[in-house]
Length: 163
Image 1: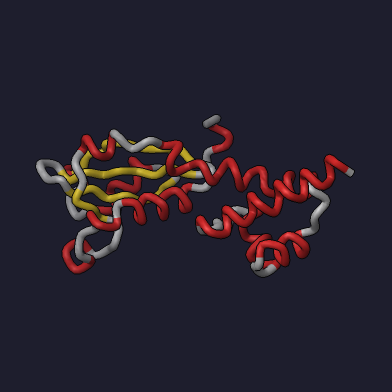
Image 2: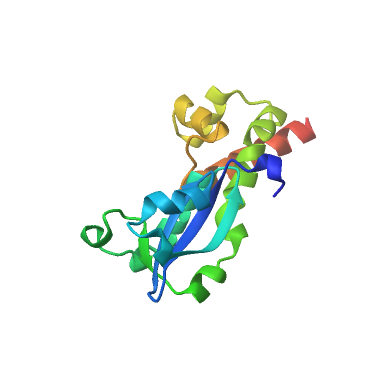
């Protein structure tokens, strides 16, 4: 991803000598490290991933590793996971950033298909606000709505091409 497209970084901080990793978001992970843990010298930054929509990617990573999430009372937040360095390094960035590409194209595909936000919302079965939020990167569609979007846009594009 080009530097000018990065709005933040997903960071992975590992507590030294433990398989405990924090997955979070910051514009400056090195500076964030000081605020995250009582003794920052005991944290290693083992990986950062630049993202246009870092909070979406973070949410998807948290969901992916849900079964490895540590109890909130242990570390104070739900961002700590029982992960090894190898598990973190084996993460394929594209698996967590793919929706960015789709959402970047949503508005242009909608316009190309000749749909207003209101018409697309009705066809997908969501509110106008939801479509606006998706196009503006405020939120992202779940997998079911992503499939509906693909079906509606493909159908509308095919219809406009054959007309």
